[in-house]
Length: 71
Image 1: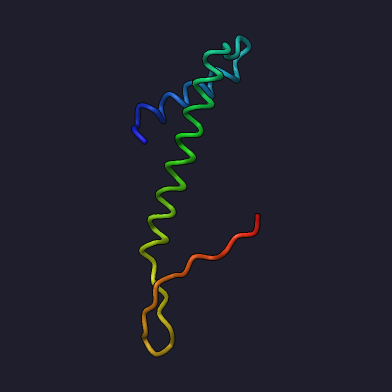
Image 2: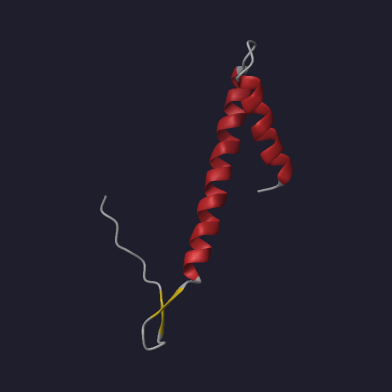
């Protein structure tokens, strides 16, 4: 996510706290930017976990396995 997008998220958050609030278009923009930010954070976390290894007491390395999720 680009710094300009993060700055815009913060700008909209500040404006939402003012008495004038946000317009419908700004609320929609804020929702899109927030979703993009969340997706970016989750993608970075997934990438970090994909490159994580567990080292046991004997010094053996093994890749971190994905955990099954219940839906």
